[in-house]
Length: 134
Image (cartoon, rainbow, N blue to C red):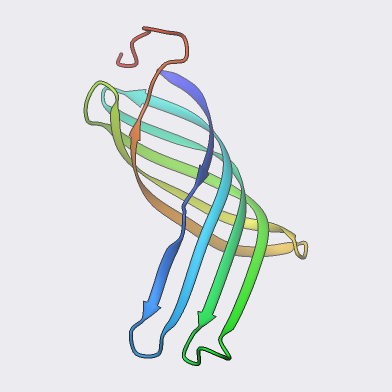
């Protein structure tokens, strides 16, 4: 089976905290992804393009009265790949890899960065009782 997928996603915040000096670093990503997907049996593979808005936040809270907070944001385009395995009728587990190559904001340049995620997904049909399994 071949199908096209449109996905809007958010990673939430991932916190890297140093227990030694009370500093935190957070990252969140919003993305729009379009992929061409192939499914054979329970295995699905996809490739395509994505647009991402990435936000980094650094907080140095060692001194309560003089805490430092630095925030950065960029917007970029890149490739999107995924591989999924179907666990049950509606449940899937997979990995997505999104390398970004072209940054459009705050500057326009070629800059590499990537995003990898492990996903647990529940899918449903918008057309009613149509079966998702082939």
